[in-house]
Image (cartoon, rainbow, N blue to C red; front, side):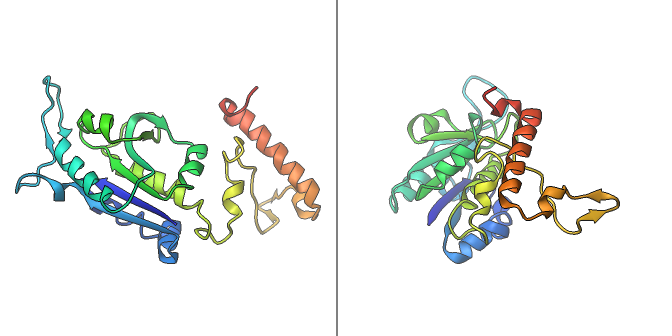
Length: 226
């Protein structure tokens, strides 16, 4: 089982992603625990303020060091964490290899970036890994945290109905997944490739590999060595 703590200033934004689909089922089965913590609960003043103007006069606001430090310190009193992740557009790009690695861990904290970011002292002294889900900027790191959780939890044994399904996903072997088809075998004159209907398992696997390789070279040549 994996335990993930999400630190955010907008906890309501994460209510739906963690209570439905694969993550919801994984939680119900005891495969994963996902806890959302409101950073405002650890603010120092009665107004629950968690941000202030940056030194140096730049526009925007910065997440205060104290509330984040207090929350992480409290969580660490209860368990040892394998990773403390910060969601940031300048972090390392999340990929399937990293999701696979994270799925083998037991306890993870994900700090959702917000405003202009968090006081850099948190990143220097508490964060162990910084992750980005793409080269663009979101209003906050909550959606990125949901993406990370989904990519990780779905890999856990028992999270999916067919545990082998995740092993054939795109990027597991640096190849895109092959095309998939289902019934009917013909619709509107569009036919399913004949090889998939013949029942020759070896030939089908060879076809799937060829299709994956062709699609990867055409759509994502950066994933191949050539």
